[in-house]
Length: 374
Image (cartoon, rainbow, N blue to C red; front, side, top):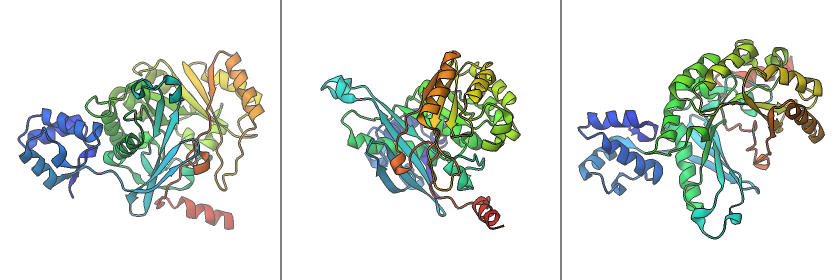
């Protein structure tokens, strides 16, 4: 099978070039062609020797996962469904923010933020109860090429639609799957995102979201510290055990200690705690006050996420007044708190709604059906 060059970080690419008798700088040249110019045809790389291009064309490919569906919502949120083989498909979502029209007529002067939410697994093994991805079961980890291929394809597609060049300014590893459960491939892909010869995204603009795999958080701190978001969703262990089952292995006290350790090397001096608002479950004033006490040891910001419904979820979104009251308790206690604006829910692209297509090796879906019939 040909080598997919999209999956090689700079170190791996330079090693390949040396193995082929070429200078390491050829790797940097080819990376710029692939990732910055979106080129997938070796013959177009005109500043690289023809012989090297021909050898690469014979043994390697530049290939993102095929797109099964490309959907755009009224708010301009865009979702791609990518085919990753054997009946599995994963989703990536682009979320544009800001009004470029306010910045004048010069396209180069327009300022905006375009965030791409990327998947790391086909399905997810952690089974958080309020997440559509978790309900689909788990099949496998994505390769580094499949992870970076989402950014590569989105950058090419969006650049073709915009006069302002490559519009992906921020990347969040918040799509399908638990990124830290696919550590090596996710880190290799993020190294490419950070590399100035590839995408040049700053560590502050690259965010990884985890449900709390404590040992992997420590590894990430040393290997590739980027901005960190932690899916907390409950103020105490009893409730978090139900909502985020990995809490039974790594309870809140251990998770918060890992957050403090992570900040030592993080590009930001805080961790973002994500908290999905579930009506009658975790949204009371008393729970807000308890959350203040729980997160006190950690420099943090709180991101409240209105629950985005999906079929048979068993949950409802907290009413707007309840979310506002919860937010006010946190803010009055001195915690920087935001309420995430729901984007893309009309095309099932909002937080917690990504499902894709998963051939479930865990038999989770079948088990749930059997339990409902018992």
